[in-house]
Image (cartoon, rainbow, N blue to C red; front, side, top):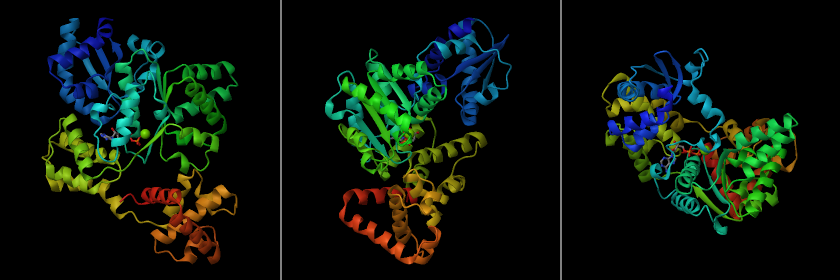
Length: 454
Ligand code: ADP
Ligand code: MG
């Protein structure tokens, strides 16, 4: 039992005795959990990636064993395992896991320990969003009206979740008296659907309890609940309850409220009561800074030439930027081969090249436009004349005309066999709006970026 009770102290001791930086500690050591103890064998869960497992085994197995021995007097045979392997072990969970499961307010800890303000690189693309997030986190006890709700929006992989977790961590650390709740709209939806399916009032009440009795609610990727009737209703009631009692709400989305076409007006205006901040694609300097920061955090040696190569070739998505770095890191740690620019290029080929050569076809455009409006490609191609389909369809026509060499006839063909004049009409309609309406222009540009991020 001893080792379980002392686990947190053991981990901290590894940090102090081996002089690990906060970053290294937070990324590799702190997440370690005891999964099971069989006599002398101690199974320790690592964050769920093979790379992490290999890395931690190589660097921290011995330090951990030494500290465990120092603090418990037992020479455990420590084995690191991934969650998927854990499932194969005979179930005999260690107490610490069982305790964590039902005791601690787990919802607050659904946060990535690495997503903090400290690790967030500020660039021209996210400066405003970063500043306001920090203010909101600082002032969470008494939210300023003008920042409530805070609506963060931007494309995939640009740092919305990172910022939201940063706000949450900051509040947990600096205002422990405040109750916060972070949830993805997917998880929120599942909770609501589950309660409805069970026809359980007490479950619904529990959800209300959970989300309405907080000082700060952060809901990530709100676009997923828009259009889901009951869930969206539940969320807006929650929103109203919190807003009316002056609690801070932070929302993230892949697009601004004015472009959420299926969002009802009453909600759209509500989202815009407070403050909206967008996160754009990082410029070259910011990409370099992010790569350098990450390389440092991971304690990884990498030539500036290679970093420049990545920053030059991956432009639109920070997750991909990190993916490239992780690939190189894994490669060099597993093979012990020195990384030259040529090996790096070879390793990154599959990450960098598909984007460069991704061909923009009418099919691709239809898929992306459909997804943007939360429709299916079939709906766009269908005979439906309902306005929430017609408009995306016309936007698809417009983009096909402007982004591919396809003829009007072939655009008509892929869009469900529509005739020439229908296509011209659609293109002209969007073209006029594009030239006259700021909202349409920004909508089109958002979608265009999704189609062709370079
Ligand atoms: P989103 O939620 O917008 O899709 P994430 O917040 O998940 O994007 O970010 C994707 C990845 O990029 C994460 O690993 C995150 O830590 C990293 N990232 C994004 N923005 C930054 C930044 N400004 N500085 C450092 N890392 C960043
Ligand atoms: Mg996200």
